Length: 121
Image (cartoon, rainbow, N blue to C red; front, side, top):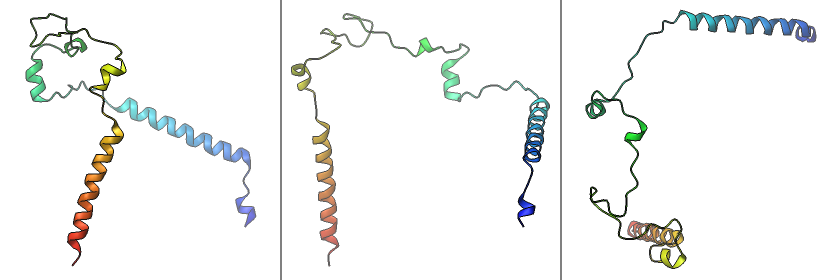
């Protein structure tokens, strides 16, 4: 039985080289045989209506930075924008994520306990 499993290393290298060469040839045949057809890019009809004849660019989606008194927009800023906020400024709007999670979990636990109590005969 061991005699059947013994194979010369050179034979193994030759077999893998032939398999690799056949794979490369098959890949080339597939790529060369396919026709290059000009396919139009699919555009959803609603988007096509918006686009019309013009092509959209990235700049069409970028928003302009609003000025302090830009009366062409629906709003205007009444205070200076801050890059960094002090803790005193942020404290008014800051919500601790742990407190939100505790509230959610306590509500879910209350619902589970009510369902459990109602299921007792």
